[in-house]
Length: 533
Image (cartoon, rainbow, N blue to C red):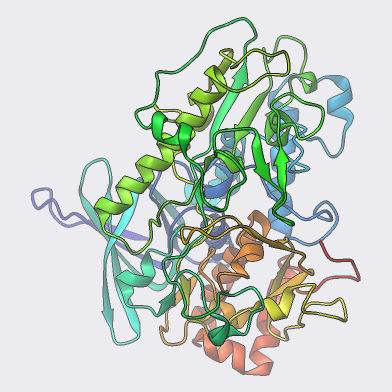
C-alpha cells in the first residue's frame, strides 16, 4: 500500500492508494476487508467510531441469529468469529469447570442468542482476525474517520476523502473498488449512486406488507442507543435526572398500548399488549440480552451479571437520521440518547417492583462496557440504511413464508450466501407499528450487490438491493457478515479477471467460477431442507 504525506504544512494531508477501499468498519466492513486481504489485495478500511465491529461492538448488540447457526447457515469466517469469542473467554477468564466444558459456551446465557458476550470481547477477536494483514501492511485500518467527499467521473469513483474526527485533517483514498460498509449507506449520496430510503409502496413492489398509496422515503425503522447495566443490590447508582425526562416519562405513541416508559409493551407478531418485568421468571428483561452470567465464572470474578438494554422501551422513532440536515440528525440522535437515559432513570427511580416498591437504584450504568463517557453505545443501533438501486431487488414475495406456499424461499442461481431471520420491522419514523412475519431460509443473490449504474462501488452492509420489508430479515449479524465477505471477494475477483461485477453475474461460466471461489472459502450458497422461522 502506498501512503505518502503531501505536505506537513497544508493540513490536507494524506494520499492513500490501495486495491480495495472499505468505507465503514462494521461487521460487513470487517468481513469485506478480511476477504479482500485473503485474496491478496491491498486494503484500507475506515471506521467512524474508534471500534470496528458495528452491531457487535460499537452498537453493543449481541448477535441475533437463526436456530441452526451452530451447524450451518453462515460462512466459515463468521463461525471462526463466534468460536474465537468463546475461545477468548476460555483463554482469558476463570470459568467454572461446568462452563469450561460446554462446547457451546454462552458467556451471558442471554435469551436472545446462543452467544451473548461483551462488545469488547468481539472487538478483541476481530482485531486478532485482522492482525496478520495489519501487521504485514497489507491492510490499513483508520478509525475515527468519516467520509466527506468523493470524486466521480461518469460511472467510476476515483477517490473518496475521509476526515479524521479528532484532528479535522483529511485523507484521500484512491482504489480500484470502493465498498460502502457504513451503517447508513453514506457513500451512496456522496458518489451519486442511485438509492432508495424508507418504505416502498404496494404499487412499486407488490409486497403484501408494503404501504398503500405513495411511497414514504422518510419512513424508516426505529434506531436505538443501547447501554450496559449491572445490578448492585443495596447500593445507590441513580444517575442525574435526564434533561428530557419529563417528556419521555409521559410519552405514549398513538399506536402503543401504554406509556413508552412502563412495563407495558406489545407482541410484535400480533401487536397484542404484553407486560414485561426486570427480574421476573417470565418476560425477564434482565436475562434477555444478558452478556455476562456471573455463574459462568469462578466466584468473585464478576460481582453482578451484566446486560445490554436494547428493548422496546428505548426504540426511537420520532424522526430519521438519514437524508436530513446535520442539525436535525444531531437533534434526533441526542433525543434518542435522552430516551435511553430516561429509561435508565425510570428504572432506577419509578419502575414498579413486585414487592410494591418503586425503582432499582442499584442498577449501575457500565460505561466501560461500551467504551464511552456518557455510557451510551458509541453509535446507535441503526436497523435500516440507504439501499442501492440494484440489478435485482429482493422482495417479500421471495422470502416470506406467507407468500411461498411451497415452503421454500425463491432459489437464486447467482447466490453468494445464505441467511435466515424473521421479517422483523420495528416501529418506524412514519409512526407505523411492528411488522413481524415468518421468513423462510433464504439466499443472498449477487444481483442485490450490484448497483444499476456505478461500476466500482459495492454495498457491504445493510445497503444492498432489498426493500423496507426485506431489510427486516437481511439486516442481522451473520447476513451482514456474509454480504461483506461476498463483496470483498467480488471486488478482488473483478480486479483479477478484469471484469465488472455485472459481467460476473451475467456470464454464466464466470459466475460459476466466482461461486466456486466462494465455496472454497467456506461461503455456503444454499440451505439443506429445514423449516421456516
